[in-house]
Amino acid sequence: MIYVYDILLNWFEEKKNIDFFEWDPSDELEHIKKIPLIRVSKALMKDLNQHTIVFPIHFLAKIKDKTECYCGGELSKISYACLISDKDSSLAIECNDKGQVIYRSHLLLDEEEEVLEFALELNEEKLEYKKLKKKDQMLFLTRKEQKNRNYLLKELSKILRQKDEAKLNYLYEEYFEEDNLSFEEKYEKLYKSTVKNFSKMHEEMIKILKLSSKKRNQFLT
Image (cartoon, rainbow, N blue to C red; front, side, top):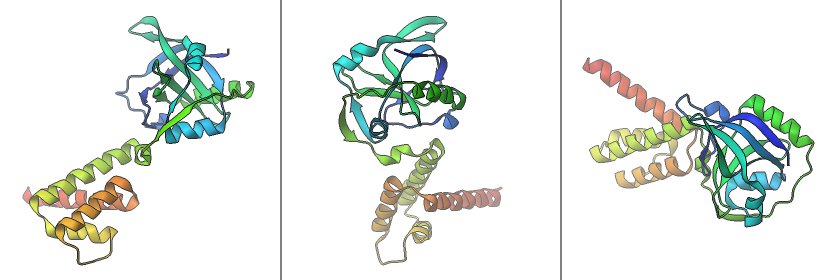
């Protein structure tokens, strides 16, 4: 088994897909001393992005205690972790004792380039796995997009509480054509579009809301 040495990982819950350029200074990076590398199919890499994955027990036995990290200044082992790569991309995964992927981490750019070079020298392994529920595609928003979506949802909730029909209509007509729906129906339609299909149009709504708030604060001062 081939190992990769001395890399930094930033573990997130399996359902999140946070790339290295979105890492935050406050994130707790883990210094990995060594971790096994396995070359896998492009289909597996794709399925990891779209589904929750479970590997069989015999796969866990293969990687058990093979990953070492520096935690609190001491060397310790991660029970079930490895790097996987399809030659074009790579990902660190950690499984629970049932084989389900529970954490994942992308790599820093220079470290990923090194891993991809190693992967070129490996034969592809045909790993068995089971696909569970499909992931919500909205989970693949960037951190900034997630923050903006949450901001818009809070503002929409405030509009609903205050029954601010003028503001709701203004935002609504930025996204939908004018119609005869009620205040509550427009709110529900706009709310659902934000949750299920966050887009550049929603980003424009946020700019409008922030500009309106800024002007209001200037007027009050």
